[in-house]
Image (cartoon, rainbow, N blue to C red):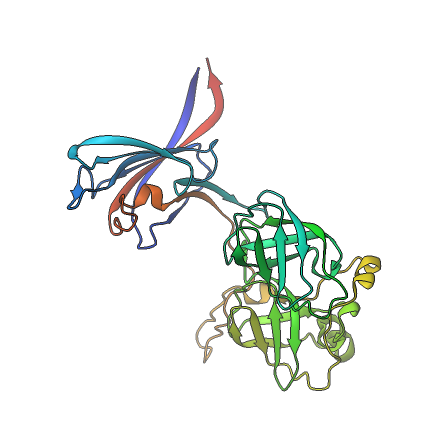
Length: 348
């Protein structure tokens, strides 16, 4: 069988992170690389450099087939294969998830700690959807940034100490590409009132000072005065809320919420009957897509982009194909790559 193919080629310099995302106009089925800088070299001390590697889209993410210099003879190559840290073929156009994890418990504590039936293979900073919980329905159907505690436990930014009872079961999935739009919306896990208002978020968000923001606060969560639709109906003016400062999981906005009704999680019984919609902090959208203004505006409009598309496709080169055998060397080297795209027509 023969196959007609298209080929793209190029170069990049290995970054200090030893991970490189190659953004491509179409998703290839084969990726090849040659390390031009280190071709045939062996560092003193017997450290071996990657020379050539190839990856195939049908393999699991991270798989690679690699040749690197033999640590005992700089002129020869030695072949390796692996399943982590190699090539990952990425098509981040729609929200997609990793394998389903079974939850066996979630504590009614601060923070909520989730236990899985087996190794969850998650790391701190991963975005994880929790759903189908038995008990503690208040946390269900929401994506959280997690903190890894052990191979079978992680915590989320929720104070569950006021919940009536812990959860006993449920499911979780890693959200593979949570940043398809920037800033990404996030569920709200707490609100502090005052002359400015501080919102605790389920996710490590990407909002920055200057972003325009609006709020969805369903009636079950209290503090309806902050809901943008309520504000517009009462005043006839869309809510004007801007981010003035942030931390990783908090957003402070220029809204004076003194005297507002308290924000509070609904009960599990309410969540069971209300088909609960989470309270959310969202970007104002197309009004702020990175427009920087034109002369003679003084000063120019410099509100950072809101809901900027970040869809992408291509190949991730991991440290197993970019780093030397000691795991630390290789940054600054020049890699030549070739991506092969098959046409639909195949002949035999």
